[in-house]
Every structure is written in structure tokens, then in C-alpha cells.
Amino acid sequence: MREGKLLKSEIVYLNGEKFYVEKVAFRDWHISIQSFYLISDRIGAGHTIVDQRWSYEDFCDITVRLDDYTYALNRQVEVIALVRSFRPMPIDEFDRIARPLII
Image (cartoon, rainbow, N blue to C red; front, side, top):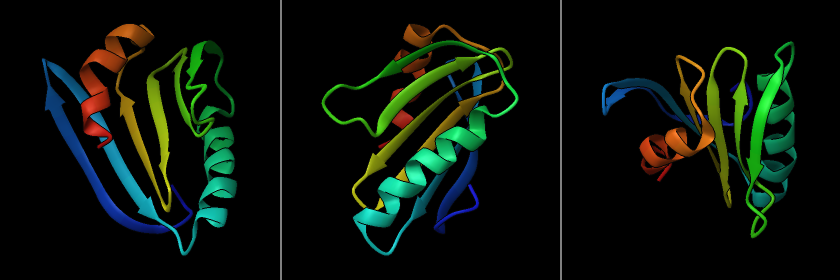
């Protein structure tokens, strides 16, 4: 992610799958909300969206399956976390395995 201050960037292996995990911090929650939508648009640019799931409790939490990979983007007040697979995965499978990596 280009926006924010990098807090974490790593490759994680979990349940036989490989994921990229990144977290960035922002000066305040206003900037993080705006950046969430910019980042989400940029990650999906040029890819076909196969499926997506938004959290209706907080519209800053989404899991998206693209034609090449699946990712989750989550805003935690002033921090945005990204977890991305290296292959396309069904959303239920991705969330079951990768969601713990967001916290």
C-alpha cells in the first residue's frame, strides 16, 4: 500500500497456503477511511471481481476474490490491514484461514 506509515510487511504460511500481510498506520481516522477506498480501488484495478463480501457492521471491511487472487482489506480506526493470497480462493475458505492474520 502506498498510503500511510508501514507497520508490517511479511509473507506468512498458514494451513499450506501462502499469504502476504501488510499493515499501515495513518495520522487520524478520517485519513484512514479515505485511504481505505483508494487502496481498495487500486488493488482491484485491472482485475475481474469474481466475488466479494462486505461487512455490514463496518463498511471498511471487505473480502474480494479476483481472477488472480483473493484479498481482505480491513480498517481498524487508524490502521489498515491487508491480507492477500497467492492464488484465487473461495471467500469462505480464505476468511476461515486468513482472517486471523488481520488482527
